[in-house]
Image (cartoon, rainbow, N blue to C red; front, side, top):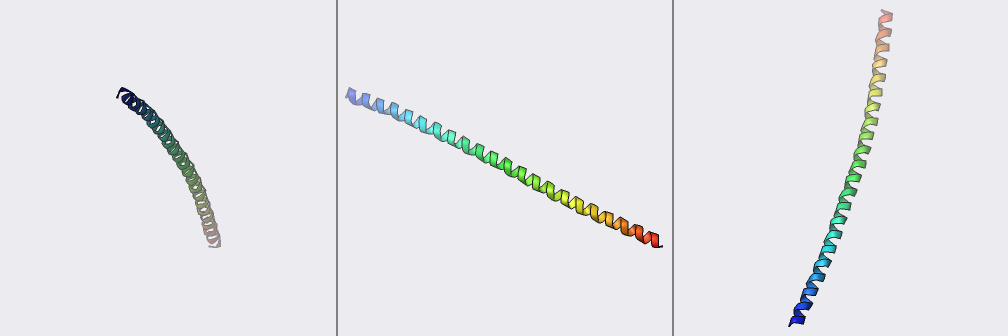
Amino acid sequence: MASLKKSFEGLKGSSHSAVKGVTETAVQAAQEAVQQVADSSKETANAVAQEASKQSQAAIGKAADKATETIKELGQKRETK
């Protein structure tokens, strides 16, 4: 009976060690996954910000061109009067 109890205690210790190792591995994998998502989100946010900046600059350029055209047209109309 004592040897059976000793075997169960040994098995319990081995099981505990195995579970602890699996848990630590799972936690590490989860942390790495979270970090990858964070890195990916940062890259996506940067790409979106760059694209928004390009589009804003293009819109500002178009507005400036239109304003220049309008000023020229008004200047020409004034000269003909």
